[in-house]
Image (cartoon, rainbow, N blue to C red; front, side):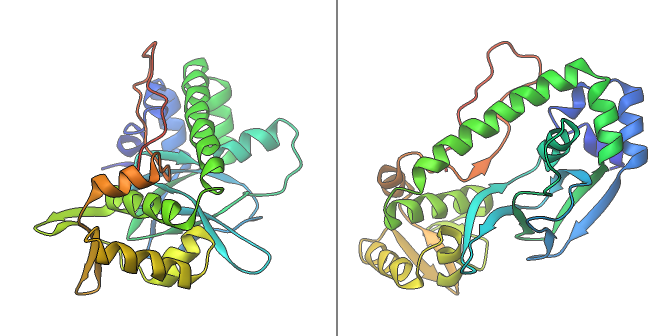
Amino acid sequence: MTIIELLKTHPVLQTLPPPALRTLSEASTLRRLADREILYRHGTPADRAFVLVEGLVRVYQVGPDGREVTVTNLLPPNLFGDNVLVAEDAGAPPKGYPENTMALRATSVIEIPAAAYLTVLKGSPEMAWELLRDVCCRFNGAAFREVDVMLSVPVRLASLLLSYADLSGVVVPEGIRIQLPLTHRDLADGLGVTTRSVARALTDWSEMNLITKKKGWLIVRDTAALRALCGQGLLSHVYLYEPGKANPKTEPTKA
């Protein structure tokens, strides 16, 4: 697919008239990322927006002690990094991107330079409206995730596992196999907790037959039980509305 065709897959960008889409596509480039490759780090100058068209992107923060905490996981189609461009254009201090992003498998993103993105946005009321709705969906999901950090490790871990199962799960006879090579350290980093607490929860769930491990892959055997444990585990953001609809679904994704 061409860049302009890929841009059209996004609910916000597909509202643009053909001339505006051409402007974006001519200024943009397609970038391919390998598994675990960094897209940008916290504080990197914000000079472009990104459209995720293939793969999976982890958004995370790193604490003063080096501990990582997953904020969300992004699936296509997803527009991100644009909020910083708009904020800095409105006069906010230029502090760069406020988070870190990493590909969790082979991933492709379209990079849109800030100047082209802002020019098109300012000239398109339809895009501005759809972007506002998109931002509200993201903000709503972030509000739920703030509550998550106050929950226990098992509850948050259940949320994380279900999120990964939703994002990359494959149905197998035993349940849903997570197609990511997750170690105890990976899961602990995703929550900002110790590997010991993660190992303890996984051992308990294995004994309860909620999960299992086969040839290095985690398999969720009882998704209903994990959902009951975590309630609304919200780590992924997918688009649940259609542009122009008067009553969009704005609930964050249930992991």
